[in-house]
Image (cartoon, rainbow, N blue to C red; front, top):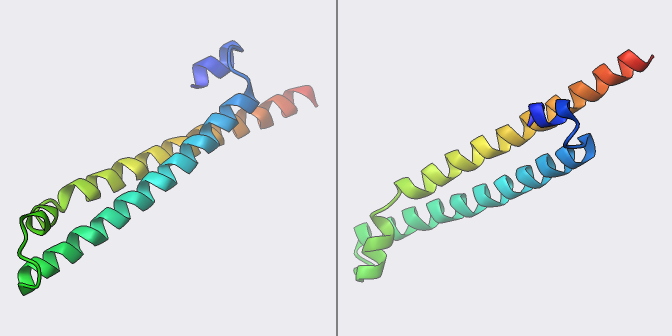
Length: 100
């Protein structure tokens, strides 16, 4: 991303727009993963308590790792978007210092 900005093939405003959209998508994905995690533990509680012994509940309760991994991936995507945002701001500040 930074090389594209330096070469002039990607404008700062489009890079910021992309970074903001990426951060928003990461937030949404994180929210969905958190909801899945809560639902997984809820299903596990129902299976353990014996209130829901259906195969669907058992399968939902047997995979708590996927939502956690999804949350971690979303966190990394959000951090990457913030890094792009920060890099663009630093470049714009440097450009203003050069012009001044």
